[in-house]
Amino acid sequence: MADPVPAIRDGMQQRAEARRDPRLDWWRAARFGMFIHWGLYAIPAGRWKGEPVPGIGEWIMYRARIPVREYEALAPRLNPVRFDAAEWVSLAKRSGQKYITITAKHHDGFCMFGTALTDYNIVDATPFGRDPMKELAEECQKQGLRLCFYYSQTQDWHHPDGDGNDWDYDPAQKDFGTYLRDYVHPQVRELLTNYGPIGLIWFDTPKAMTLEQSRALLDLVHTLQPDCLVNGRLGNSLGDYAETGDNRIPDAAVGADWETPATINDTWGFKSDDENWKSVPDLVRKLVDIASKGGNYLLNVGPTAEGVIPQPSVERLLAVGHWLETNGESVYGTSVGPVQGLDWCRTMAKPGKVYLHVFDWPADGVLRLPGLTGRVTGATLLADPGAGALEVTQSGGEVTVRGPAAAPDPVDSVVVLDLAD
Ligand code: JFZ
Image 1 (cartoon, rainbow, N blue to C red):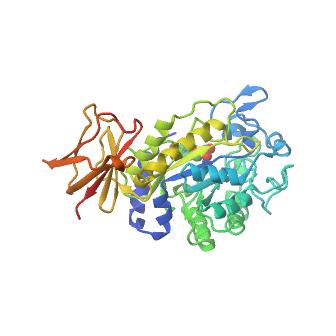
Image 2 (cartoon, protein in one colour):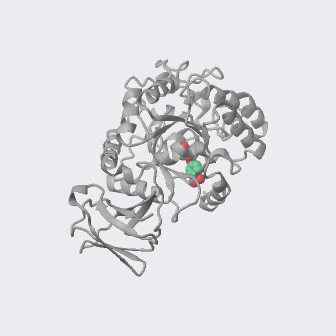
Image 3 (cartoon, rainbow, N blue to C red):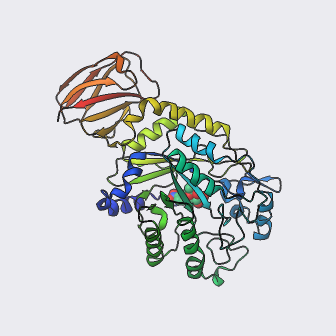
């Protein structure tokens, strides 16, 4: 795939003027969300007919060119009896995540919500017979998180007129416009009518969508729920904020609203043999890196077909949440930090304050921060205010803070710098 970052940056620039749109206030403050890829693909979990299928788990139908009739046979086997919406929402909450974005329909076309448009959905086609999106919506309301829906608007490998499946359907015979009008639009209407207030709709892989088609979908969302946001993968640089390429973090701060969607191992949809889990320090630093550049981190989990979020994901998320309990003040509600481009640290800003996140604590405990123009009136360790004020001096455009010799937190020690107004 071509490097998506320059294109994303163009989109970001175009969105810069929408920067102060208050509809995004909750999302800007949130900084950390839970992505959930959950669907029929969790059953094969990366293997088809006894053979491993390389690549991301939710693409198995495409990668193995599984005929629709064969893939459909997974539906009667989907019975996630261990699914517990309260537990998932509580996990997100305890992990410090402020919103949940879950696959209502991924490219395989199977609907994980009750829909009148097709029987190919979890309520009508599985022994489970429940609508997990309803249950999640209720729990999010109860526990105070925003629920958001991923919806694959272009690719649908099950629908004869959807994009992507050229092994069952002849692309020349497809009527994409009709699919959008008579299937996608009514389904988006259902998602924005039947589940209460929805934080955002996460579209994906726009491919050949025309400007009119993207615009019509954007208008539909905003007509149904004016406060519902739309991500940047609607196509044609439309949407309320930009999405980077998967797992991509821009190397500099970006003056617009953006989000990095990221895996916690190497797959989105559950794969039984993917054990390449990112470490807790890596996850914390990625969150901080992203927030310091003005973005949000949308970190994925891939629940099993039984409805269980894999334990290695749970442990890591809770550890990040534990770190955020102490350090959240320096992440949530912050904006792009004043000092950028240093390896050893990241900065974030709030009115009257700069949070200095130190990844590599110097051996002598003396932090030398260049590039800060404001006058610093004090410095403390966020995790240990009892340690009192740290000695600060400022000269020649450099702030010097004398901290303890040992890193207070080997992952990221946060120093709060107070600024004179
Ligand atoms: C898409 C999906 O195809 C994938 O299954 C998953 O849902 C992911 C979050 O999004 O994959 C993409 C989309 C865009 C890029 C890369 C993978 N990109 O812009 O680099």
